[in-house]
Length: 159
Figure 1 (cartoon, one colour):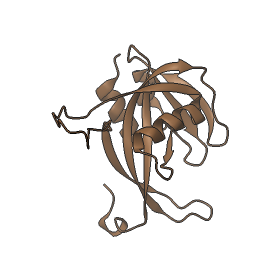
Figure 2: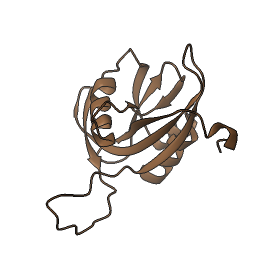
Figure 3: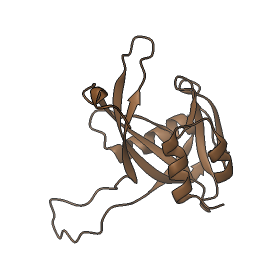
């Protein structure tokens, strides 16, 4: 739990994606250079970009794969030409990001999506990550990663 004293820090909007293979037995994670942890592709939202657009872009830029997002939207009958439901994230997380170089400690409000890999040749973007691998559920449980990665894997992956 993030201490109350930290909840007034600057907060950035980010989005990340937990990428599964079609049988949901493997997830594609990268080893983040700055954080020194295994996690899914993701990053800061660019101007005019939705969180869903962000994770599709980041999956391709950071991992070389095209994904289809799994939609967790409620099924609403809006019957309106002015609005529609957007692709909803699986969950949202508030994450405390430690200071690094000239960037002070801050928070990330992370829209966490679930995606299925549909095409691509996995290739790590060495600017952000040093490695990229597919992991089984039992392997994810043993990784140096954040508790949320393991919690999502436990909910969504098959042994």
